[in-house]
Image (cartoon, rainbow, N blue to C red; front, side):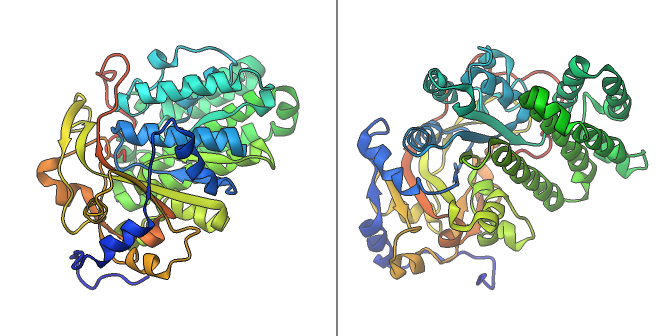
Amino acid sequence: MRKLSDTRSAAPETLEHVELLRRHAISLPALDSEAFASLFDRYGDARVVLIGEASHGTSEFYRTRAAITRRLIERHGFNIVAVEADWPDAARIDQHVRRQRLTDWERQAFQRFPTWMWRNLEVAEFCDWLNRFNRDLPYERRVEFRGLDVYSMVASIRAVLDYLDKTDIQAAQAARERYGCLMPWRDTPARYGRDVLYGHQSCKEAVIEQLRSLLELRLEALGRDGEDFFEATQNARVVQAAEHYYRIMYHGSSASWNLRDRHMFDTLRHLLEHRGPEARAVVWAHNSHIGNANATAMGWAGEFNIGELCRTAWGRDAVLIGMGTDRGEVACASEWDEPMRIKRVCPSRPDSWERLFLQTGFPATLTDWRDNPSIELRAALSETLLERAIGVIYRPESERQSHYFEAVLAEQFDAWIWLEETHAVTPLGPRQPQAGQAETYPFGE
């Protein structure tokens, strides 16, 4: 891949690119229409469809990918929805949508900052639909809702112990002894890595031994309580990954980012393997995780992500779809652990991909180059321009430095959904997170 020789992004200099995008853009009809849904049948042959978002607080991004996901489930047999969320919290939703237990997940799950990212009206409406869809299906065919992320160390320890308390008292006691190593940091897990950096003994061997011990029970447990055992094993994997994440996070953001995305990819792979040969997944996460990192400044700086790993593993069977907007409102915070606010999103920069799509004049479009033979379109999308990324923190006053990065769109995604003006998600329940430092600190894209 050719990288620019300097740090400036090339601005579109002619109307040629805009006219080309106009010819290839497909105008998007209403989300609830058959016309909208049928546009995404083109991805029905994939094994994994990854749908991104340019921010964690935009209603239209959530609603659009929910509509796409419904179509892939109903018409094409996709049976896993895997999201950038903690495994134990997503497990509450999974119990609800697969009708194992009708949980009050809107109140019980996602209590830590940023609460609005998954505990919002848009997610709740999709989960209500999924619950109804699963109602008349046998359990083994019901669609799962799973979390991919690494941050839930304390909750995952609790889940492993709860499982072993019910199945093997001696194993539970051994697990308590191993995980006891991490208990001094149960309220502030981010401090663990700093303390290890300054000489405190690490818990690496203890958490590895616990996962190894649990996996030795695999054959016996899978025959007796396969689903519960799979849940417990995945929670043990989360603890191991989280211990490693916090241990290296102070050594640099690239190492911790790569570990996190490797864990998310491995979790997705375990989900597909556990479901069997008919498994097909839709992944919801930020564009920075979904798009192929090798086509962005992230990758050029040594970072990889789940999108790049999926493309390497499954090739054409992994579809990467990005989303972008020009302006509107977003739910976000100004600093970590601060209250949620609704902020105005600045109009896009003139040297950005967002501005290029804005100039087409279409308010909502799908541009697809996975199956599009146009050499001209690929060439136009193979330039290096800026792309905006808003996480849970948004700082419009320093937007260029805080929220833009260079990207080659043609290699980053297979398709791009453009929504010119967008609005904030609607949070459920109290907007304030629980007290105490979140496990996601100081990162959390």
